[in-house]
Image (cartoon, rainbow, N blue to C red; front, top):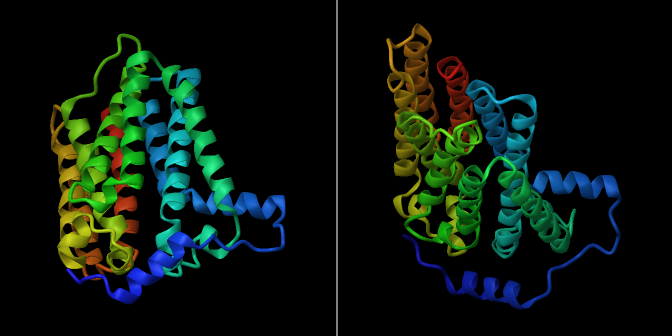
Length: 298
């Protein structure tokens, strides 16, 4: 693992002590709203929210229950995304990440902080409205994601919050049903494997910047190639559990999904440092959702 250079250390210290630069021109409301959307990590947030929506439909939630459940997940994801960009601001400044709205000055740090806090405040009552047990489970998942942003992403257990948060999502959905049933173990295992795989895939494009700014989670310790391979194995394992876990015979769609997942992940592994592994993971997750809707139909 490359050591942090004195120049990098001095640059980080300068950013830690210097005030964050702000544009003298006040951006318009529409521009700020657009920057806030970009700062919430919209693709992962939308993917997880749509995953939750598909689960609620497959589990048999009524319109009102589905709306509250999906709303809670959306609010939680928004809070996590804004928390992530705000927590990473100093490191993003050092890495000159002009693609980040905070670094580009499109939105203020205070606005992102308030947005994250407000989304979290909305998430709490919406989660608990699904039932005390279901709400507690979802808030534990959101707390795990915040813990990743604020501390655990720099440790060897950086994968754990992803596995925990994803693994608890099916439980949040099913525990909100009458009788508070827990999801089948195979569904929890598949979701946890997908979450861990998404972590390794998501980190790949930023490994060099992370190492330069002191973020040394498990993917950074393993390196890009090993992390890409592990991401593929975890996502493939998730799909395999979804295919063979439910009772009954494996469907033709399940067999085709398993073959296509293996082929797509093999192709993505050839470019371990780009966005392709993460985008492939999102595509596999979408295909898995279709299988889930079929498998979990009441």
